[in-house]
Amino acid sequence: MTLKPTILIVDDEAVNLSVLTEVLIEKYQVRVANSGLRALQVASNSPRPDLILLDIMMPDMDGYAVIAQLKKNSQTKDIPVIFVTAMDAMMDEKHGLELGAVDYITKPIRPDILLARVKAHLILKQASDFLHDKNAYLEAEVNRRMKENLAVQNVSIRALAHLAEIRDLDTGEHILRTQSYIELLARQLQSHPDYKHIIDDNFVDLVTRSAPLHDIGKVGIPDSILLKPGKLDDDEWIVMKTHSELGAKAIELAENDINQPLEFLSLAKEIAHWHHEKWDGSGYPDGLSGEGIPVSARLMALADVFDALTSERVYKAAIPFDQAKEIILDCSGTHFDPNIVDAFIQSYDQIIKIAKQYQVL
Image (cartoon, rainbow, N blue to C red; front, side, top):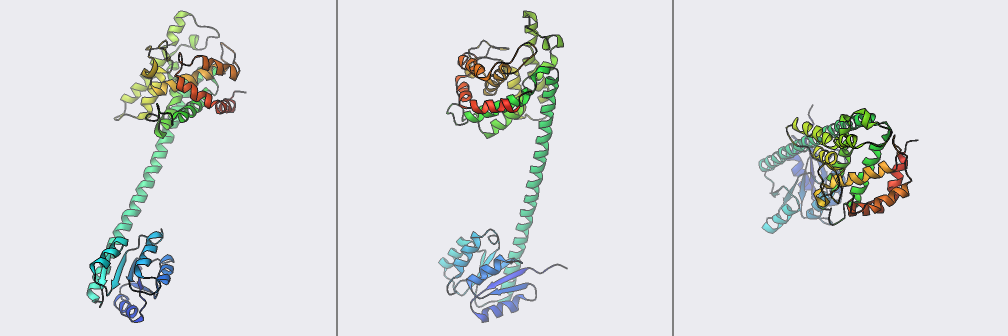
């Protein structure tokens, strides 16, 4: 059985409450209040009215004050209010509509007009509620699918990154450390005047998620070179340096397989391709310099080097954090963007916490 809509009638005159109730009772559930304060109490309780017929001229709290309070309350602000009044001045009507009333009905009441207006506004309210519920459902569904897609994306990124890491046995928690370093450095630079137009929250999120793919190109490097327990010779070093271009090419091929560009893949490609470039132009593979190096790659350059210095590898021992810090400082303006080095120094204590958190025991 379908419940009748609930109408709240508010009037300080008993005769008016009786007249309105008699007109509406056959089609609607009717609740009454003989004061503004009582109306607010009734409207806030369950079942909340689907529509309110509100008198303006009442003692203590008039209709204008009542509707103002209704609109301030999140539980009652969407209930349509029709003023029922003997007043017919245009300024009074204008004021009521500005406060949020949906309509005016003047006394003496004409039952057919009252029923028609009530029915019309209840239909509008039902349509509005349906759209609100539908939009809320769609928004929840979109958020759910976005979270699901993001989770799949993150798992895919980590799986690809681990594919490279598995072949480089001494990197340990390299992915987690460098990912955390790059996020910390990016956030430190968000307020810097030279970077605030580039590094927003979205950039930080994307560069952090794409960072694990920086060495994906190592899957194309022979084990004899990648796992060599010693210094590479000139020919081996030439092969090793190709991992940056191999990684960028792999990500580019992935981009070509989809119908629209993905920001995180663009950043991942930048990082993979140019994280070995140096501020002074002496890096590889393209000899980029200064601001010609993408910010994402500049961030990864420092994060990657610091982690390499402080981690044990098959060909070297780890060095102390403070010694690595001094090397980073000495390379400011040559290997690294000086502003990123400043961000590193400002975040140094947190950098060390990250390093220790993901330290290989």
